[in-house]
Image (cartoon, rainbow, N blue to C red; front, side, top):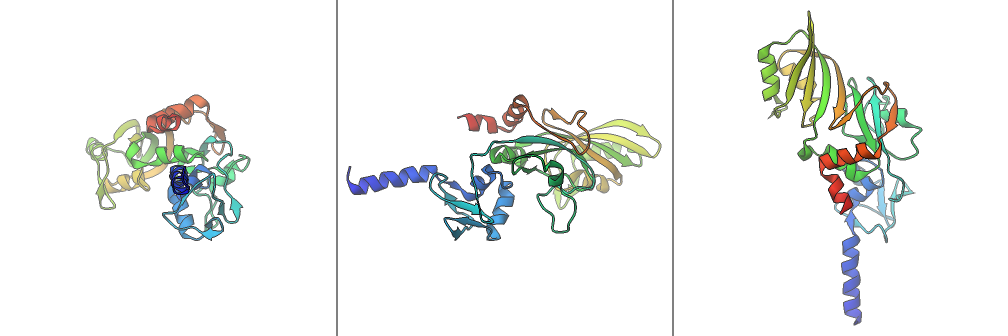
Length: 261
């Protein structure tokens, strides 16, 4: 083989091994892809000693990628955690305002895991955490429409008109919400317990929907994500998902088929 053909062959092989930097970082357990893009823009990521930029690609077999001076390694064991998030914690890896974050509840997990999606500070319930970027991206991406179930206590009571408005969608932040399932679990004087099943995940969506129709959310708890249920897991506690639970979620999102090809 001529030197020119040899170099061309090496370049093709190198291109096949290259991945986008934010994907590689997510696969290494740094954060979600979106958050990794923010970290790249902040100048905290380097490739072979040079400050990385959005759009950069890396070859994991050849390039040295560091984040805050620490080398990233994709070989660490993957973890899939279910946390029962209590109220009063923010769903971020760190918080500039000094508020309590969910990371304080999983300090004894021997891996750099991060939250999949969000629950606002005053909400509670099932929160997934992982260091598997493919898993996190598949479950959090809006196009997957993974059903999430919430038990929501509202004040005052609701009527059929309010229920139909919520089910059919209301306008929040300039956009109509997608149709969803809303069921009355309990109706008492001055309050009502509803079950919401959403297939989109907009910021503080249920609270904003309820505000539009004139009811106030007193308590909001996520009870399931896809086939995974919170069950009897105590508030503030976590557990590892078993292999069957992980596979069910990945099949639901379409990520499982991609990983095994």
